[in-house]
Length: 562
Image 1: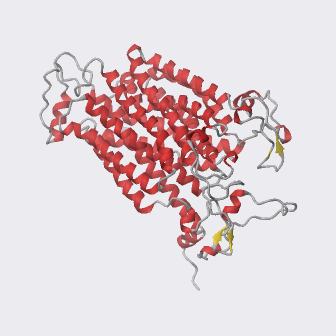
Image 2 (image 1 turned 135 degrees about the horizontal axis):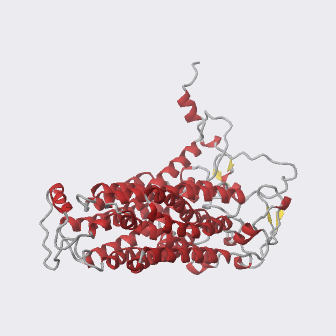
Image 3 (image 1 turned 90 degrees about the vertical axis):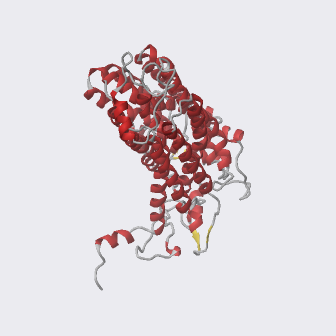
């Protein structure tokens, strides 16, 4: 018999479950990257909606813009003496108007997020997400149609942003729930840290796509991303698998002894039984994965099934019930301030680069992508560190502690030249996006499967929506405050961001065992199999100064929760 080609051997070396997990990982990555791709154009187009021009001289780019746009209708601006942009953003109050556009989108997003998680728990994820993506594509394109139809009504653009913000809330709870269904808790920080780079990838692609047309036909900067989101919605409807049980797959990494065997019965989880463990009850996550005679799983519930008294008849958790989960409120407040900083960069960074480095809108948009490149590495680094230390909150606190002085340095050295701006964009992106990425992914998934739920699997989407919805309040406030403060100088904007970062650190510092519902009970240490006890000290303080009574074998710090 001939030896199989190397490519075929590589394919069959992975189990059916592993290929499905990889497919869901990539698919959900692309789905949410398209959401962020459609949010980025507004920050790129800001430099075109308002141009700095002198006197009554029209900007020469508009003549070139007309010839490139081809079918563009003639502009008639009776109330505009100078052709300094697109009315009504051509006046001196343009920063407030642009800030109001950001605020309208993000405020609607924050309000809708609280409802989205509750609705998402009660509807099929595939249908819910498909509807949101198609609607988001329509409203994103509608904003761009204002260019072709010569619309200068501020209310039109505000209403479009509000509607787009509402429908985009369908995305995050859906994709996080779906991914958590397919991946267990093991190495969740690394997996979700890498997966969360979709935010930065989407921002980068959105910047490049919007920047391609911003100086010639800015309407296409919205229409093309809108079409991409709608197309991905169709892909979601055709290919998204909500839960591994739908196709008889396991939800965590599995081993298979014979790589060339392809039947469902062969894909079982094999766990070596150590001496002294025979009398122990099986881990709840493992119970869902072990197949009984190849027919059905022992535990048919979703996500992570914990021992509970209610059997399999549990209903979706209520809003107040989700708030009572230890750590939800504290992490929500921490994310509020962390997301305030991140979204201020998302919406105002290109305009800041234009003002400081005197670049045009296209080059500023391209340069701003370096912040998102740094965010990719920051999210992955935060996941790896949190998995290694088994301390999510400590990792967030340490990165927040380093982010504040980095922002101050950024505001100082970015005026020294392009090279300094590039270096600080990468570093700031990593430190700002790391905690934000960790809280919205791995932390949300951990809280949504917390042991206090006693096996209720219908909480993940609601918990995710509460945390991200509270964070979106900060995301709405950040760009609005930047629009109000920036006329007094960009330095004041950076002071505001540093203050918000400090508030996030303080909110994270309140995560003591008492705030999680009393003194933490000892839990088995995952690495050493020993017991660790919690103390009354905030995790970030314990990690930074090693002065608290956290106990761990061989003198190492340990967290009683993660």
